[in-house]
Image 1: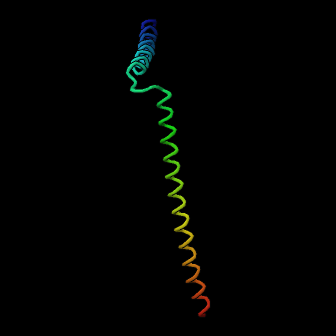
Image 2: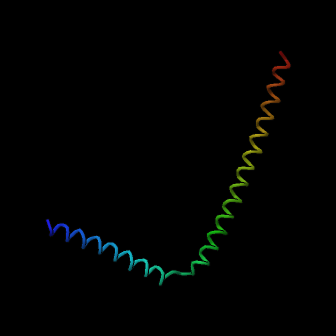
Image 3: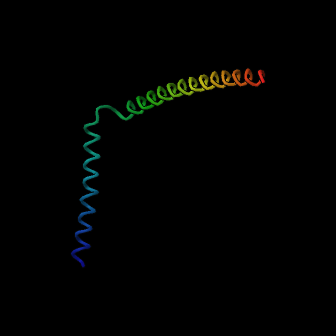
Length: 81
């Protein structure tokens, strides 16, 4: 029983140690600073947001045009009766 607890503790420490070493290597080998990365992420998210707004606007305009056409056709059919 004591051996199982010792093995579990060793495994947990190895996992935490590996995480610390991995994080340290990532910081040392990072291609750019965190500040620059945050700026790029902000620019990218703004660009995606603008593109999404354009797509939604186009879909909205298309749906409005479609509704007007269908409404015009329906009014014409109802008027003929």
